[in-house]
Image 1 (tube, helix red, strand yellow):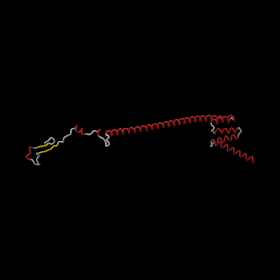
Image 2 (cartoon, helix red, strand yellow):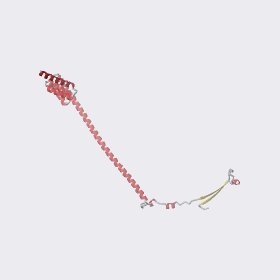
Image 3 (cartoon, rainbow, N blue to C red):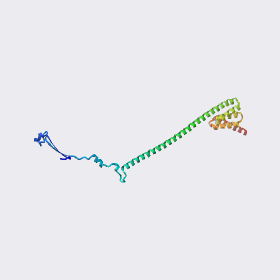
Image 4 (cartoon, rainbow, N blue to C red):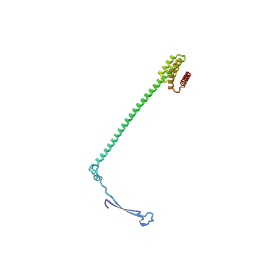
Length: 223
């Protein structure tokens, strides 16, 4: 009809036209009528011409949208950079703090090592002095049984110079003074031995015997 409208007419099974309208026919004839309408297309160039470029779009304040988008993007990037810089500063601060803690631990470890070394050295020196003192006590015992009391006393004094906390040395010196007839000095040394070692029963028995002997002597003198 026109370039926009098209009229279609189609016939099928023309040989069966005599039975037209018979619904029971195997291949009934048919007449088909159609009407098509074609919408015209706009040319691409025209469409482009009527379209708006983003550069020409502005906000209500007259600011180009492109400028707003670029500004927002740059602001977001700047914020991200600031966050990263803050994170780096915090990381550096944590690293410095950890380094200080490591230095402190190393110093403590060094002090502990020095302290342990000093204790070991002191223990070694103490053990050496004790061993030397025991050697003097051993010689003093041999001299004591040989009734060489001055020589035995000298050995005991050397032992006490090496270790002044040996209860055995004070007990030995008390016995030597007793044999030398110096009962007061003997009693003083036996008491010193008992102060260092309260469980020194031999010394306690000696002091008890001395007290009992003094009591008997005093009683006999009064009688």
